[in-house]
Image (tube, rainbow, N blue to C red; front, side):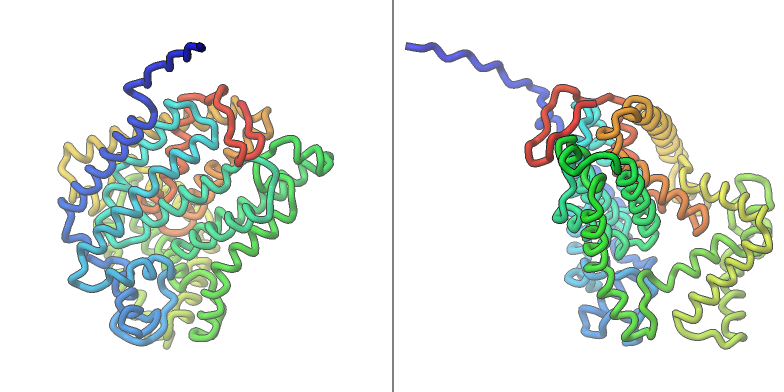
Length: 455
């Protein structure tokens, strides 16, 4: 008769229980925000609901209230809204936003495991996303921030896969990137940086044979031109239909939107330069140093009418050319504007009209939270670079979150910028900040992930 070895008692504060608690806290906070800002579900600042209503009514992807085709907004989010786009479907939009937001949290945890963050690091990453004020604030809004944050968390999970590159995983990552750019076109900047990173990794690996690389357990997309091609095909599968549709109805194969020219001009025009950039630091575009933003918009519309500029495509091209001309004429001011937009992108508290909606105590709390988070983020990035730089396999799986933060920051140095623009990359920020807690050197990788690594 053999005696069974006694099993160690389960830890009361096991990781699963803590994750469950974090999810409950995240759920409670999101439900609270939906209750507090319930009326925001019926607002439509970016006309996504109106476009979805047009699709539901059979008018196609058209300008609000018409059957005129539009390319002004990216198409993915309105497709999600179609079943809940009616004015009496507020509850449906609330449930949609809640599910999209909550689904982000498990992918953060799964990605943290693939990145071999320690137990504390994994829990910290999920907590940051669960309680982030910016992500919470945009849950009640029918806008792309919540969907984009989920897509980015899925993308980082896909790109953090370890093991030899495969066509299947390359294609999957391409599909997710395609969905990202169809929800927010600025993610093209990340796609470009990621492509250069893949080429750089391939060049670094040129001295290795295929067999040696297969044994090395290097991350996906590091050792195969085929995976890069598969990723490109995945992107094309998502994006090309949008371009073909635009060619058929707009006469040009637009792969982004006709909103880019406006956002480029909004951050690079003479009025903005004069009323904000050339003023003391901290000035906002509220009319205190000139006519103000609303007056500029009215003047812009009047100028386009007087010049006979009609249609989305023509207006987009004219505004884009106007912005580029302003930049060429004012290179020094443009660089100063880039610094201001950098500050706005990473600002610790709302500024301008958004700040007036919060009581002083709430503004102080948000500022304190982001001050602590940015210090943690900087320390986490330094920790990643210091501890993983010499370990090629370990460092490569961290390239995606690093490149994502860099790409979105660079994009909004040129285009219009504010704190809202960073909401979609909060998953990457959370993972990088959580690196301050160190790495799990004992956990063995899932065999399905490849050979894994041990930083």
